[in-house]
Image (tube, rainbow, N blue to C red; front, side, top):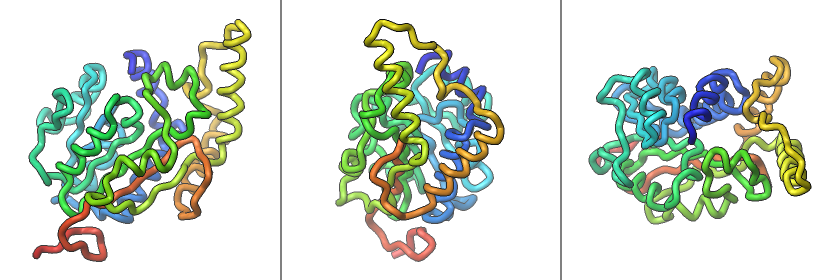
Length: 260
């Protein structure tokens, strides 16, 4: 992302219904399937400003990783030097099977080879460990917002699932999220595309960059989080959430790996 995008994100992400709701949904799922504790280790891949990883620090040991200098500058303010990992090419500087959990929240769409990233996750996550991924969904929603954020793609359900080799991963949960606002998001983005084709100059201020009124912000977050709790398979949504468990080893009821 550009420097201006990081600055805007750092300004609104703590309170904005989408960013706050996404972090809450992922935390709830990790508490349900990973049961992270002080002796377990989480890597937030593509950590951005580091707010999600910072919120996870009370639950487990945390590493953060990014390859953008602006993100690394923000991360170094929030974390100890040994927690901040720079990405060298595709190489993640951690030993094999060293992680209990890896998270990538709205990251895979930013990389040319998303399959290579997921293969790295399989190397790093121990048997019984968890990967949690969110991505933007539906190319029907492609807009100037995706271009500004340097997205390569938006995903559909099967496309995201295909990245996780069934020999290496068990998909615990995969569903569209941010379902309630899909019609409004579709309409706004299609209107912007149409105006651009007609030669009009749509406003440079994007809806996604603004904090709504408090009552609306609270309502949208409640809808986002509430619908993401259900196992009802939604046919569409603005985003996708995938939770996968690394195969191998013997797993016990709380999601940890039992000794052999």
